[in-house]
Image (tube, rainbow, N blue to C red; front, side):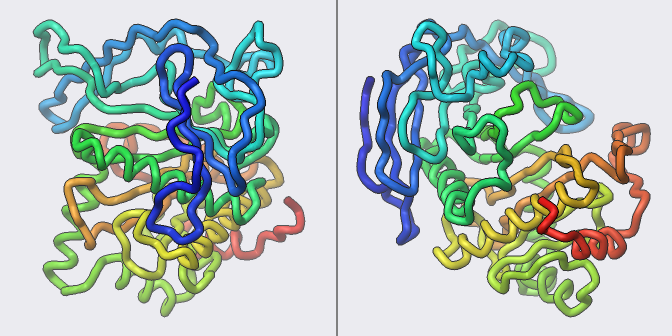
Length: 376
């Protein structure tokens, strides 16, 4: 068990989280984060002492202009295990180790045992479509030790800690010099393909700029060149003036059903001040951003009285920056378009890349504002 850090983390924030780094038996890194000093009361576990032989590759799609990842070893990854074999819960039986130790901590991050990308991906044999090694990194972020909880069940302080954790992981990848873009995300619900119900998210770190980040940067730079203003500043100002689509406003952060929403109850969480990275938020801004995110998640669950299946994506600027024009924000894509009715990506979405929405964003925002949060 290799302990590398046991003091308060070195961050740009004054209220830095505590963190402690370990090495798992199979060689993968693990970091525990807490609002209080970390206390570990068991050995650092791994479901297997042997590392998975990951050999991810990438192939270039010439008509879409994007990379496609191939990782055959992922076919053997954990799929909807029974509660007693939850790999994201702290180990209770040393004979059946999980990914996490027992102890006092709030969040945990470890390298994915079945990654789609690895920093040490071996060079593959020559292949079609400009085949190359799948270089990057994949991490799992466990939000809580409570297997039945939700991300929105975190306290305000824990939600703010999560933002600091995402910022810390991004800074670590940036320091390595290989990673160009980092995406943190959460899939929730079997409807969106979740294979583990324990509340958790993932981080994908790419050695290139993926298509969505590329397009966002291009459009933000175009807006800045044409207006002299950061896109997010103009967008927030316009939405505050319109007042129709704002769901919740904390002053330093707000949630909006954007006027161009592709999903019926799509919600964006934005800082009021333009920043490119989470690490650029002040303590007060980070706390307001965290409260706004929690509010948005609670409203989605209360909307139809069920746990809303969703995809959450955290968009930060490319790491070859600085890119002050890039609009750091979070997007929530809820998969229910009405009670009991799923939004499926069909012909126009998949084939043409253009979405069809059944409800105007102004109506959806009004419904979300009307939600009674005492019901969740």
